[in-house]
Image 1 (cartoon, rainbow, N blue to C red):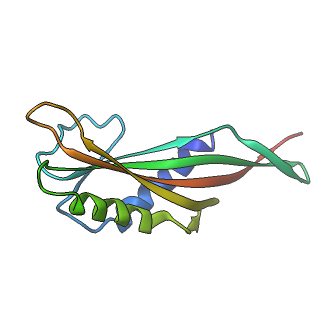
Image 2: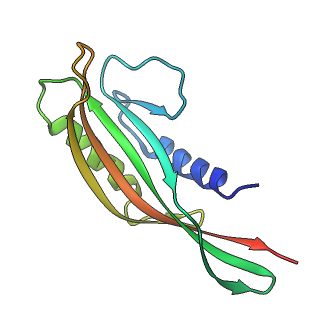
Length: 140
């Protein structure tokens, strides 16, 4: 089994458990539900190439860098504060935390602005938190 699936599940489970604002809908990748009419977060996880860190007995130790992105959306023409509060709350759940072999590091927020020109547009800011996922593989 790939080490990516358990890490992604651990990250999404933590987010589900610690997100407390019931007024903000959460959507994960490949979610078939319609876009919510009010504030929501589109949450996803990305990973990079694993780096070999060393050996321990018959195991190779690896570190895979990655990042989470929480695209935060609010209704337009309502100011930016609510969007920034959502982004800050996402960062607070992860930045500086360690669990399931995952160490979360620095973060950033990028204010994207209006998401489209349609009448269904939202104001968007993206919260991004970088992490390293350590894992091992056995060899014979």
